[in-house]
Image (cartoon, rainbow, N blue to C red; front, side, top):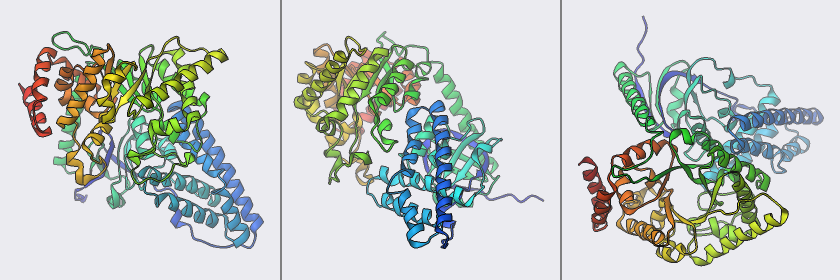
Length: 578
């Protein structure tokens, strides 16, 4: 007689959307802590074991880089190139040799101790992104030790049935081996929203829940499991009622997505015939490949940070050029707005050796850093301009606070054009160059900026943070972080109106643009281009097609008179219901 297992629910971080029901595949690779420490008198023999393992590691990683470049592109491959850099780093591999030669440890013990020390240094850092790089160090360390001890564990590439992978963590090199044909999704005990695993899950389109904690340890191999990659909710041994609930939600989700997908080939035009441009935000050129089929008319924000963050060294002009050109070519003549490097704040680059700051979001970041390190920005601008010969590339500078920064950045752009022309490079005759409006001072100077720039793009995520003086990462003041705050709405109107007076266009690339509930307000204010995560395109298009801009203009004027974000939200809800 079969025993019915009791249902158990737990939660993690939903990082890649989708509801999945399937059998658990418990993945248990070699754990560093399981390696017993020991010594050996034959140092020469241990050094040979260590060196052979390193060679095998480098060969494996090289093959994975090639595979990842073909399937996911250069940016994702750069994550694995970073692990190759670790193996060749003087602070990583040479200390292992010293532990063998100087202290008599075995090869696996020397590797374990070194990995623990280096990963520990990263885990102690205050920055979340840097802490999560410890997982990459442990990944390459485990790979190295697996070769030393000839460990033969379960291989992800050998999965031949549909499963949900369960693991303590999935490293970047694990994730790129996942076959979408068989892997329905995965759930891990560790990981965060900014981890490479989360980034890769989204790129692969695999539902994922990370950071589920100790609950993952209780999931047996082959058990039935439900995961919701949107909410982070998971259920082990779901009963009939729970399965019916999730199956119903999954069916409804699929039906709604299918209904919205039918809008992909239709224009984003209002009931009174006004057309707006719907664009998508991307982080890699590969994400541009399917955008036209999804109904995007442009790339409104190409974040270039991933090209820089996944590697141990600055990408060359040629590497950058190839990435930007690929995105431009994928959009087949439609615009690609590329943002210059926006690093600093919560995003660090180890090889830039950035100073520690008390208030990094108010400090040495984005255009401030790039204007100080002119060669960095000049190289990037050269790559962007060259890519402009293969499509409609537009350049955008982030975190501009006033005319001085804008003019300094534009001067570097002109210098890059002059250099390339002198070299005989193929460059476009004209490119639009604009700025992100993220800082209140720039919004207040919008009329002056509009005389000189070609366009504005409003970054609401930072504009809210700086206008309301609220740390959007601090849960205690999260209630204050709201893009419907009257002051923020007032600044958005100021920017759009200033651009219109000077015959320039205004886009928005913050999360507000992808919120269907904001559509009546943004339409009423006259926003020209709305750029968002590609998953929001259909919902926003549906909202726009159901609105009348003339009515929205009158409604927006009334919203500007309201005193609180809550009042504005309620008025928007009432308007859309009516």
